[in-house]
Length: 339
Image 1 (cartoon, rainbow, N blue to C red):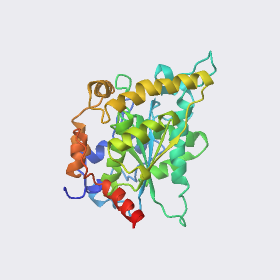
Image 2: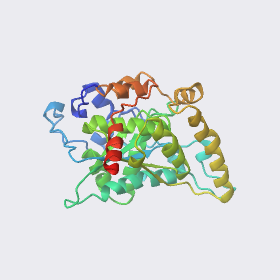
Image 3: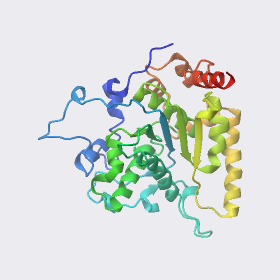
Image 4: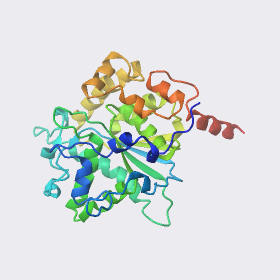
């Protein structure tokens, strides 16, 4: 078995900085946004920036729990713009939405951007519940979603959700991005910017947690639509042999009428659940083509498993081993229960 993965602070420099330099819609970078906007990433002095090797590494001792916010669209306002605080994350015009995510004036259904904001804030609220020196910090939040609309913007879904949360803080009068920016700066909010579907949301977020902390999470909570709970609990988690007692789904659905709810459930069963039931790892042509259409680059997989266990590398190549590193926890729990 491969040696344990190293924390992200000693990952190859190009990989480390790629997580901080996604280009936004105006051609600048997200790193430029937090440097020049109201959300400084770190202190600078007359153009001097501390080299990576002298920045004290973050200590992730005691962090065992992972919250995954599955992203579904892109909040596109330029975070480096001076008027960024004027762009509400609740305004449909500020999102790149799929047709089915847009408001329906005939039924009164609001745009699903409201639900996406609720997903992001639900994850952040978990971290805020630990916002006390008397309460041990044990949870990392990963916002997961790649740049799935490259024809419109190179911005990733994950980074845009973080920007939406910042915009919400600013709208409430919290200058400088408030506690959302503080959590991001402290490394409590991480951005997984490669996933193109729900299976990758789960797996890539777990792998990011591993690369950052050097270990796998003990508990995983997925924040997504409630109607997708079966997909995660009955298909994705079993597909990677994730222990069933170590994963939960927190479901928040869009506002729906009875007819819309029935249509949504039927659509999920036919187009969401059934394809994964037939192709658990998403390597068949139907699901793989969806990934490619959303911008998935298979070469990225090598970066995601660099330094990880051999069985994890095999998993991304479509082979599921009985010796995946998180399986031992399940076996240990079973042994304790029977003793």
